[in-house]
Image 1 (cartoon, rainbow, N blue to C red):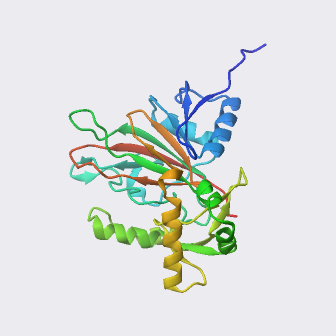
Image 2: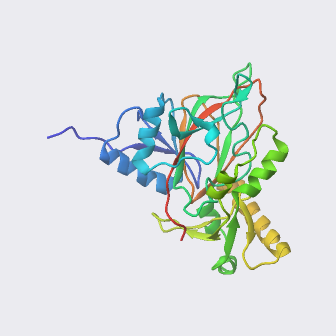
Image 3: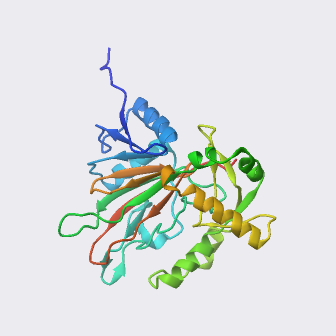
Length: 294
């Protein structure tokens, strides 16, 4: 008989979202049973944390593929050389040029909600973390459970949202970012064609757990279909404020070697930019292909 393997060990990070996976080395190939358990944990907790990892790009990609095929981001100028599955997020300059996106995710959002088929999840690997002389780290990332946020709505509020659809536009957010960050290049016509505006239900059913989730975010959601601009803005702001309450939140303090993966259906996240250009930050991200929104 083969060696009996113990189930993966989890430590809850917050009441509604997040769990740390203990005692696992992601540089090694997962056994099918491990991959299945991790996928179940991922769907249950929304965010999984793995500490003290050391990954090559190939290992990062290999681990991510346990959960599905991988996306190639539309901002191809920030993809890792020879590894297009990895998006570089960094404020580091080389030869006077940004090696990655230096202002990624500094607003509440869910990755790729602006695509017809949004991503299942993202896997972010911390290679360099901003810190000060006293070893205080910066650049925390906050996560909230949009499933818990939906559950917390009153029945009449849930009924009001049933059947509503919202518009998501990547270009709208990107142009706002360009106004604030001169290092962001203008989108090419080809890039714009890759990310046309899309419409998704305001309430999304999780494809694995069946839980209902609020699927609007301040990053990419621009309006409610069929509503006046005033009414749409009022409702969206109410939902944005509701989803991002601290009671639904886990705030992650990064360490070098952390790998964090999150569910882009049942969570939103926000990267806190409380560090300067003299405090280097370098992260590698893969994005897992998802399923159509229902």
